[in-house]
Every structure is written in C-alpha cells, then in structure tokens.
Length: 210
Ligand SMILES: Nc1nc2c(ncn2[C@@H]2O[C@H](COP(=O)(O)OP(=O)(O)OP(=O)(O)O)[C@@H](O)[C@H]2O)c(=O)[nH]1
Image (cartoon, rainbow, N blue to C red):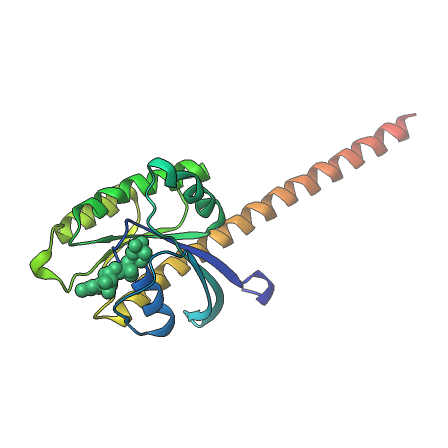
C-alpha cells in the first residue's frame, strides 16, 4: 500500500445511554487511565494519534452526551452520525435499558447514512460488576451477530488492553471501508476514462467518413 493511499485520519463517535461508560472508555483508550468521575454535561471531541497494526492514524473521537435515538436528542445525534466514519455503541451490562438502546442506535446509523455497512462496534461495558449484571454475555453476542457488528464485553475500569482492542477493531473496520471507497472511486474514474476515450474514437471515425 502506498503512503498516499493509507488512511491518515478517522473520525470515531461513541454512542449510548447515559452512564454506560462512554467517557471512561475514551479516557482509558487515550490515556490508559481510569478516572472515576467525569463531567457529564459537555460533548467533547478528543484528538490523538494511535498506531494500529503498525499504521499511525490521527483520530478525532466524539464523546456524545446523554443522547438516545428518540425524542428531542434525535436531531443533534443525527449530525454526529453524519460526521463519523465509525461508531462504538456502548451499553452497560448493569443497565438493561442501555442494552435495549443499542439496536435503536444501530438503526439510526443505518437510516441516517442510508447504508448497512458503516463500521460499528458494540461494547458491553462494566463487566467487573458481576453482582449488578442485568444483561448476559450471550445476549450481547447474539445482538451483535444480528446487527452484523463486532462485539467486545469488557470493563473500562479494569482493562486497558480490552478497551484498546475494541477501538483497534473499529479503526481496522474504518480502514477497510476507506479502501473499499477508494476502489469504487478508481473503478468509476476508469469507466469514465473509457467512456471518454470511446467517445473521442467515435468522433474521430465520424470525421474521417466526412
Ligand atoms: N465499575 C465500573 N464503573 C464504570 C466503568 N466504566 C464507567 N464506570 C463508571 O460509570 C459512571 C458513568 O461513566 P461515564 O464514563 O461518565 O459514562 P457516560 O456514558 O460517559 O455518561 P454520560 O456522560 O452521562 O453520557 C462513572 O461513575 C464511571 O466511573 C466500568 O467499567 N466499571
């Protein structure tokens, strides 16, 4: 792969019900640290550079706040969805309603982007809280299979490497999509070139007849 065709940057968006751990995941991924409490009021875009599979990518990561795909939050959420190249849909294994929001959020991505192939990873967070578990691992796996998304169950509080694995998977999927898009553009421009060449040839042969 030539340098010019490598994906230099990507925009990632974290979606999910309030309190499921979106900010904790972002901060863990960027700093490798888990900090107990975060400011819940602001939507934040983090910038960082990460190396995945020996390839550096500049990332913008949008941490959305308290939004669901229903009600008044829907419009700004759609603009975040239009902005992103890839999505982490997060739920907490201790909060059934956050799990139920996942399918709705995935449908909103599909609908907003008019595509079923937008890179999306589902993250089941807080699996250190076994006592408060309200969603079984198999339920998360089954939902991810149905929605054709990669799935990670983890704890932002306990495992930096698991968080890194989930983000890395999303970055890989965004890269695949980027290269698919480039190939489609190449194909289109080849077709246009051929059409142009054919038109020129036809015009020339007409001219010769005259
Ligand atoms: N035990 C445990 N607590 C977690 C974990 N991840 C996040 N938390 C806690 O859950 C609470 C909510 O985490 P946030 O990261 O603020 O959640 P959020 O989804 O960004 O919340 P909003 O900003 O309201 O949308 C905080 O008290 C975190 O410390 C985890 O993996 N395990």
